[in-house]
Each structure stands twice: as structure tokens, then as C-alpha cells.
Length: 460
Ligand code: ATP
Image 1 (cartoon, rainbow, N blue to C red):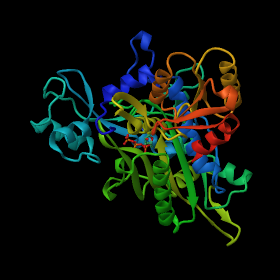
Image 2: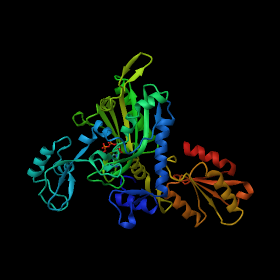
Image 3: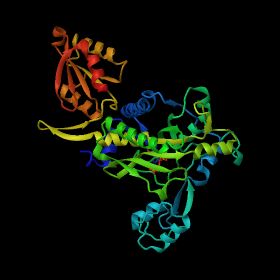
Image 4: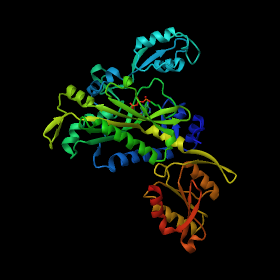
């Protein structure tokens, strides 16, 4: 089903069920900003928890940090963001619209424009008749100029150049500048990693595709520090690990692939980059995560700009060196979109249409729903007790309104993997019915066994 679901359908589904809303909607909305609703926020937390569990807690060689969004402005000079974190911008004089010049060129000519200079792009756009303003077909374009993607702000009350600060465009630099702190204050030894989850900001020229590309988004990045010479093997290792994470959480392997960045197009810091891509039905193969071999570029830059010694002393060999870094860097929002699209299913079962989100139980916003067959005593009391018993472990939903069939359909749409029904027999036999979202099969088990059964099913 995921191959046929349209963007419109996903957007309206997300709104209707409280996954994602347009930000500031009552004021007409603001482009490229979205808010996560009651189901969306649970799902997003689950994605982050699963990443943290897989990348930090399940390992003994990765620790976490949570760095500030506003950092010393020199950080962004050292990292290269002030000088080179640009997209090429061109304005159409007929419609007044601004476009990413590389996107315009690529769409009209099929030419790969990444890496071209502003002058080369200007020449191409002004001379090639195939390149037109997608809005009105006009061919009156401005010169192409680099546009820096960082959001600028000022610290303190005075808006002067020396008070300029930036909202971080990636979480990675908050890790690099804490490398020394972490080495000195925890017992890590190379090879080891530092992970971080947090908001990043990029003033994208053309945000779009719902939560795929926004100006404010959340990243999950891990910098894995290794001895130079072992970096290529560790890079391979992390590519495998990250791919495994996606498939273990239920993304269809047919919709996942690895994309190797061509050598000549690598970012200034990268020796090799491989993306994990997802085949979105409305956008084709698109990046979910980049896994880069960043070499010793960042630590060397920060050492040079800060004057600090950022080398690592290996106690076993008595040698010092600047570690190489392998970085898996993913976006929570893009992953949320991929999980939603992959799970969204419309199917006919026994002559009835149903919409069901076949999310992995670990990702599902609500793990189980508890239904009393009747609102009356003692059925409702038993159901309440069961709900109270379960609710500390997971997000559990209690629903006593409408027919059981309707209650099931509501939970199917929310992606709730299990529904537990307390009925009139329960008071006699102390048993309840557990219904599986995907197979719709039901089993009857003792009420005392529900908690353990759910724990097993959810972590399976
Ligand atoms: P793209 O080429 O799509 O702009 P990128 O290669 O610049 O992405 P990275 O700098 O590698 O992205 O950032 C790591 C991850 O952060 C991306 O794989 C993506 O999941 C996420 N990300 C980057 N930019 C955005 C954005 N504007 N909106 C949502 N997520 C983003």
C-alpha cells in the first residue's frame, strides 16, 4: 500500500488522527513548520528512544551529551559553516519566486549541478532555454548567489555584529567541542562514540514535502572516534548497524537502499559518505540518514581555532593522535514520515475496508487499548483496574465508547498493536481477549498474564 499512498492522503490522515498539524494553523499556518499532536509526539519519542537504546544503551562504547543550541560563533567558523554552508539561490524576476539553482537546472536539463560555482550556474540558467520558472514559464532570472543556511540571531540587547550568534544547523559540533570534556570526565577509550539528539535549524530556500524538509527539525547524530587507519572498517560497520536498525523496526527492506556519494561531490570534511535512503511514494529515493567518514577534520579545525590540544593519548601505546570520526546522522522527522508511509495500509478484510497503521509495536504511539465491553459494573471496574496496572509501563488507551468494532477501527488507524477486551465472562473466568492489530486474531488469556504477554509482544 505504501507505494500508492499520496502526500495529500498522509497529510490529511496525520491531521485527522492527531499525528501532525500545520504550525500556527489558526493564523493561517506558517510554511514549513509543523507541530506533533498527541499520537505524533508519542511516535516521535519512540523513534528517539529506539535510536538512543540501540546506539547508546545497548552498547558499552557510546555515551551521550545534550549541548546548547546557541554556541560560540567561532564554532561555526571552525566547522566551515560560516563560509561554506550555502545553497545556490536564484530569483525569477517574473514571478518573484526564489529557487535553488541546482534544483532548477537539474529538473530542466537532467544535468547534475551540485558542486558548480555560482558563475557557472548563472551562465547556464541565462543561456539554456529549457530552464524556465516553474510558476509562470518566465526566463528572466537574477544572478545565482550563494545563500547561507544558518539562522542568525543576537545575544544580549545590542544588535551589533560582535553579538551575532547562530542557531545550530547540526548537532554534531556540540559533540566535537565537548570531545575533551568527555574524555577527561568519563572512562571512554578510543574507539568510542558520543551521541546527541536535538533540534537543528536551517533556513532552507525550498522546504517541502511535509515534514521531510523543514527549517526547524530534530537530528540524531553520533560521532564515533576511532584510531586513524581503522576508520574505513568502522565506517562499514556503522553502515551495517544503521541499516539493521531500520529493518528491525519494521521498515520494508524493499523501500530501503544505500546510496554512495560520488567522490567528487563529497562535503569538504568527508572521505566517504553513504546515505540510507527511503523510497517515498511522492518523492522517490530520498535521504533518511547520512553516514560519513569525517576524518580528523572537525577536531583539527577546533584545535586550530580554539588553541586547545584535542588529541587523544593512548595509554596502551603511549602515543597521541587526533582520532578519525565516523558519523551516522539522521533526522527524526524524516524517519517519522518514513515509518508512517511504510505502515499506512488500506485493506479489505471480510468485505470491510479498514485503514491500519502497521507500525512496529516499539514505534506505535499507543501500545495497547483496554476496552470494557460494557460501561457497567463490574466489567468497567475490572477494565479500569487492568488499565491502571498497565499504564505505568507504556502509553495505554482506555476506550469505553461505541461498538467494539468501531473501537478496533479507531485503534487500527492509530497503529495500536493490541486491544484487550474485558467482557461479561471475565468476572467468572478472570480471562480477557487480546486482539492482534495485523492478523486480527484473538486469544483468550488470564487477566493476570496480560502484562507479561504485552511486554513479550512489544519487545519481540
Ligand atoms: P539534504 O541533502 O536532504 O538537505 P543533508 O545531506 O544536508 O540533507 P545532513 O546535513 O547530512 O543532511 O543532516 C543529517 C540528517 O538530518 C539528514 O539525513 C536528514 O534526515 C536530516 N535533515 C537535514 N536537513 C533537514 C531538513 N531541512 N528537514 C528535516 N530533516 C533534515
